[in-house]
Image 1 (cartoon, rainbow, N blue to C red):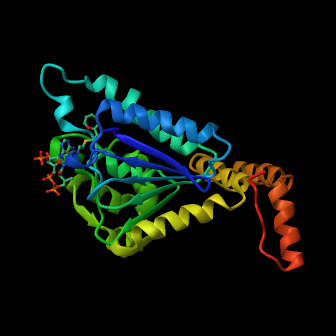
Image 2: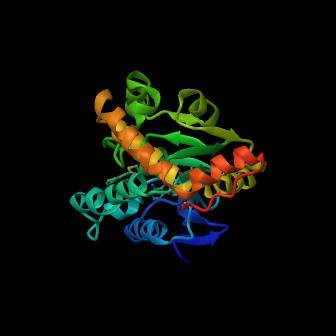
Length: 258
Ligand code: LHQ
């Protein structure tokens, strides 16, 4: 059984973490395959949005803990640098929107994989656990960067140190999640949301992502200059012209991602 399933439909790449009997925890092969699939999403012109979700009852339980013990254990020196960090940087740099559709529990690196995506949606019964402190580790996969930015320093520190299970309803209130959908409508709603994103002006969304990424380290003056530069680029796109024309013609725009 393949640990990552990949399907392109209606300009959306659907990536499913697929080790349901192990709650989609990541072994090395699965992490490296996810990285390759994200590269494909970047290079395939027909992909205009990406949706990552989990098979079965979990989104992902993070690192497969069985793989880091015993004589054949993968060394800690190889795990973050080779497996998880490249996934986070690929998602942040991918010039297309990436949605995490958190269908169930997301723990450890699984939680932070979700939080590094552009839009995080969750099923009502989903949950997020910074499970690291329970096993004597620190939040990784970008957790120490994303969590304080999403929920503020104090909530982030509490969540990271206590390893609390945060349900979807609370996660939405805290700002970890864009929207929560009832379990029975979650699959359809997440596919619909990704389909809408795939029909939006892809280059403007990529510039938006670039600007948000840069805002994390830019002073205001530099950020204003970057907005100016990116807005000028956006204004040259076909989709910008189409958006204006459609508005003036009182019709729905047809964006092509050009
Ligand atoms: C698992 C796992 C799992 C293997 C459930 N591994 N089998 C980076 C750098 C280097 C090293 C370490 O890690 C990292 C990043 C990280 O991600 S560290 C954090 C790793 N993750 C965890 O510590 C979470 C461990 N899992 C849990 O705490 C629970 O399974 C949760 C709360 C996620 C779900 O609990 P339950 O709903 O009660 O399910 P369960 O515990 O019964 O799990 C179901 C099965 O999945 C079970 O297998 P079995 O054969 O007994 O049915 C678990 O052993 C397996 N599983 N997580 N991470």
